[in-house]
Length: 210
Image 1 (cartoon, helix red, strand yellow):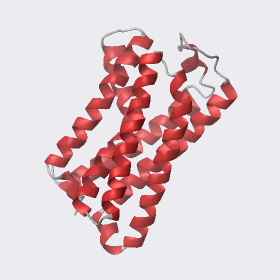
Image 2 (image 1 turned 180 degrees about the horizontal axis):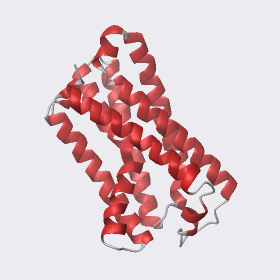
Image 3 (image 1 turned 90 degrees about the vertical axis):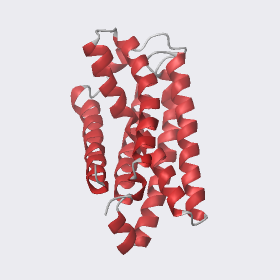
């Protein structure tokens, strides 16, 4: 696949991921009653209004990160509007930080209990490390390293979409109970996204699109 086609595919996936999240949140289950009803073994009660607010903020900044990241992989933007690329990079960085902070609140209430909560927290640490590494490299003017680490960081933006795709396999395909299917999906999504990013880097995707 050419760099341009890869870029177009990733941008399309970003849009699909955002639309999927918005439909799930505001159309399929607007009060999150069905989703919350599937949670069990929680150590603390869910304060629904606060939880929904945090979820909305989480979705908002995750969507911004998806869009900002997709835009900044454009070589045309980098060549012609370097200042916009730089500003958009800070938008991405701040959006990721907001996603991580809200995820820290949501993780203890994760479906699947403590094991899934721990996975999300570990995932957040790795995401932060990848994003910070990309930021440090660009400050040192190491463009190639910056782009590679940005690809690793950006892969994390697709966590929600990847989990839902694996849910189709474990839940609908294999018929596992929802909580078990969700736990397996979280554990499968995380390494799969990193492996996908590494594969894209090794096939030359770090160079962006023409």
